Structures are given as structure tokens and as C-alpha cells.
Length: 365
Image 1 (cartoon, rainbow, N blue to C red):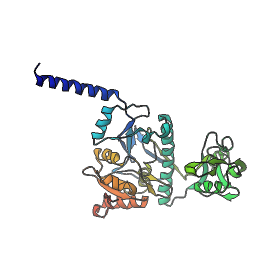
Image 2 (spheres, helix red, strand yellow; image 1 turned 45 degrees about the horizontal axis):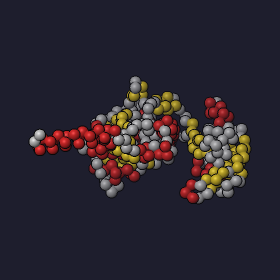
Image 3 (cartoon, rainbow, N blue to C red; image 1 turned 90 degrees about the horizontal axis):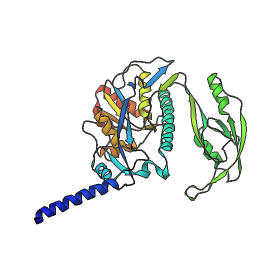
Image 4 (cartoon, rainbow, N blue to C red; image 1 turned 60 degrees about the horizontal axis):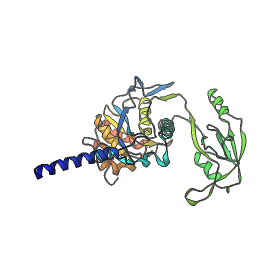
């Protein structure tokens, strides 16, 4: 056999061997890619995304699209060839598996957490929009979750309203941790609560719950970051009642990053005229009850997904601007926002055509 032919044959066999090895070798990575984008002003799976009753609504036009990122499952085993392809692909992102599923978290656990965050973001979106419209919203601090095996298990329950800790009134969730950590581990702390069932009955009857009870809990020790502090094993959150019904119908979506776009969609439906002026606007960002917009993950993938569907403008959390501006899809304008007020101001410029006034993202922020 001629030397040249033998060399080519050996090289071909070596390449085949390497490809086979690459397919068989699993690597500890996962893949992120652009996910679906949904118009909060439109329909999804045959029904309106935003359903409002008990209050006058107005016709809308254009798009206010929320964006998502698709990720591989926790059980998915990526091979070396797939990882290399993902690293070379512009539209995908390969990240360490632990980035998406830390501490051995299962897909079921991750899905549950994402669903809880999604639900909380919907509530904050409603509150932020109504506050912007000066519509009163009743709020109270609740037990959001109870850690299994903690001192609070069986004594406090999710949905219990926390009125006071050690006799000091609780006005916001952060107050709970502040008051508990005034104690040393092993000391007793007294919670004054309205039981979840009592609160649910009062809300259903459109009344204020008045029946409270004191629950005494012995604090345990947390050793986070080497700093020992007293804990009771709960997380506190906020619950609300609204003066009319606002339902967000969107299945198979998780996480808090759609908060801003839901809030803008609600605002648009409750006000005359069109926020977008018929333009295709997409965006992302968490939102809190006060309308502050927070950063999210996968920003570059979300801009790709938005532009591929036709978005012209992308409302971008200020803290994500520098990353997003490094690789902006052609034809997409990144607009920096820190609050819902910023977003509403930007939409005013967009619908008026005064795009030179828009606060645009740069690689410096």
C-alpha cells in the first residue's frame, strides 16, 4: 500500500476513533439556548395571557414579549462532541452542570423552585402595576416556606400571617430575620400569627382576620459562612389581595424574570391607548412590589430569541446591560431600565418615534 494512502487511512481511522470516543465520553456540562417568547398582550395556547375582570380594560396593540431560556434536564448526559458543538455555536451556551443544578439538585426540585419564583413574580408584577396606577393593594407578611426538620416544622405553616415577633410589629419580610437574629441560638422567640386557614376564610369573606395566636419557638443555630446566628427555619414573604381579578395564564414557564413584562402588560390593559404604539418590544427582568427591576440570567440568549421573532426593542435590566451589549443581535435596540417608571418612559419614546432619547445599553453598562 502506498505510504500516502496508508497515512490517509490511518488518519481517517484515528478521526473515527476520536469521534466515537467523543460521543461516548460524558462531560459535566449542560446547555442553554433561546427559549420561547410570548406576547403578554396576546394569547397563548388559545387563551389570553393576561385575564382581568372586575375593572375596565382597554384594547392594546403591538408586542410586550416576555422571553425565556431553554436548558437541558438535570438527568441529561452531555457528551464531548455536543459540548464542543455548543461552545462553537453562537446561539447556544454551554455551562457547568452545577451552575444550573447546584448541590445535586434534581430537575423536580429545580422545577418546583422555578414555579414558586414564577408565582411570586406574578404577584409582584400585579402590585407594581397597580401601585403605578395608584390603585390600593392590601399586603401582609406571611410564612412563605417552612424548612423540614427545623424548629418551626409543625408549629408555623406556609400562609400563616406574621403580625409580630416578640411583640414588635412586622411590616415587611426582612423584619422577621432582623428580629429573630437578635436572639442567641437556643433562646425562645415568640411569633404572633394569624393561622393560614383563618386568613384564607377572612379573605374569602372580604374581611380582616382578627384572631391571632402566639407561637413560641426555640431557635436553632445556622453556621452560614462561619457566622453562627439564630434561626427558626422559615422564609418570610408577602401576600396580597387585589381590588379586582388579575390572572396570568402561562404554563410551562418558571423563574422570576418575566416580572417586568407582565407588569407592563397589566398596565397597558388597564390604561387607554397603546404603550408600544404598535411596535414589537420584548424584554426581561425581575420586579419587586415597588417597581424596581432586577437582573436575570441568560440575557444574550434572550435577546437572540427576541430578535428571531421580530423584536425591535429590548427592555434590559441595567445590571445586564454590559453583558447584553457585547453581542447585540443586528436590528435590536437594547434599552436600559432600572424601574417600571424607566420602562414606561422608554415606551413613550418608542411610540413617539423619539428613539434618540432612549437610554441605550453599552458595553460599560
